[in-house]
Length: 218
Image: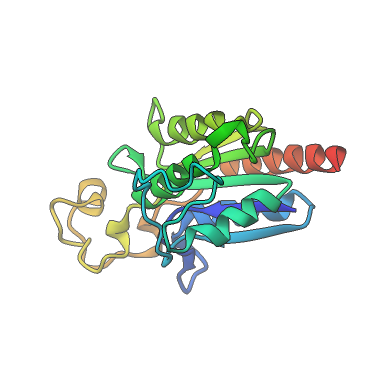
């Protein structure tokens, strides 16, 4: 089973014309999972309570985090999965706090050289292009610290600024809409950025590659 973890707080939403207006991470992650051709499960961290590591070290004796929130059930799914596709958006040029907190908690799995995620197949999706890419770098670093396999592949995609759906984007001089289009009476479908076909094609290639490796290792 391939596990997709979406660290974005936003869900994919399309308007009346079928144009994706938010939720690029979810849209692409679900596309990747489907195109692997393998059994898969999707987890959306949005709406879940996941705190960062508290540094309490109560996990040192048994590699089980003692913080009471929604992390544990998702930890178990990671351990059971044959591969993990982790998707996260960039906020202010770095990985969003929900994704950071979730990955930070894998510290609880690293004690006494047990490393239950060691060798786990994986791929990385980041939304919000930036070079260099601190979100991808952070995800890689956490995966490496748990001795997971090198990523089968990575995909970097452009996001859709929240200004297009906040309700005030048409006239906000601090936002992306006015910066790109000037003042508008109404935000119409043709104003909203689209995910390029090339991005979906790259996502499909990544998915097929991951699916093949998972099937080979079964």
